[in-house]
Structure formats: structure tokens, C-alpha cells
Length: 127
Image 1 (cartoon, rainbow, N blue to C red):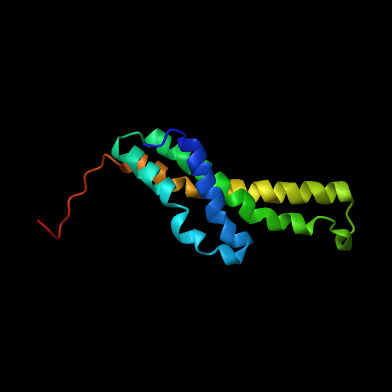
Image 2: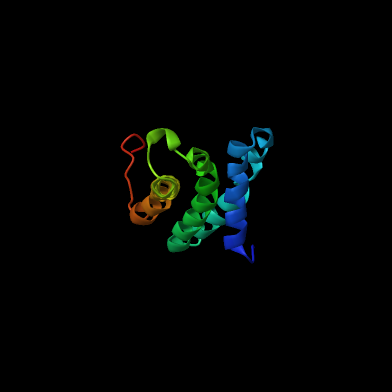
């Protein structure tokens, strides 16, 4: 279907984050995640759940790193009395730290599908 799946997914994540930075691009929210979900559900349907986790990580990276660019606006932090080097370290650590935290939370969905995909649940209401 898609030859360069990783590139499509990364661009999809970047476009999905654009309305958070430039609100006038709000229409992208409705269409930008479509390639990601098409590829993700195709991999899940073909029992390639390990690739689904990788694809989710790529999408989340493309989404959360631009969303948290507002940390860069905090840079000088002169009002706190810390040096510019310490300030830069705090800003970069917060930017990457919160992005990685959100990415790890987003990975729960495909990981849960992988772990619990083979469990058969009996529906007591239909029997």
C-alpha cells in the first residue's frame, strides 16, 4: 500500500500537531491522522503488532515534539536566578521529557492490543 510507511506516519504526526501551533490550520486535525490509522489497522489486521508499536512511536514523536515547543519560550528564565546554561538544560529536559512521557502513554494502545489480542472473552449477556 504505502512504500515509505515511516515517512508517511512521521508527516502525519507533524501535520496532526500543526493546529496546536497555528490554530488557523484546524482543518488538518480531521484529515492528518488518516494515513497513520490506515497503516496501523492494516498492520494489526495482518498480525504484525510489533510494527504497529513502532508506527505508533513514530507518529507520537512527530506529534509531541512540535506540540511541546512552547517550552522553548521559557528559555532565559532570568527571573528565577539561574544561569543560562542551567536554564537551557531545564528547557531541553522538559521538552524531551514530556514528549517521551506522552509517547510512552500513547504506546499503551498497540501494546495492549498485542498483549490481549488473543484473549477470548465470553459475553455473558449474549449467552
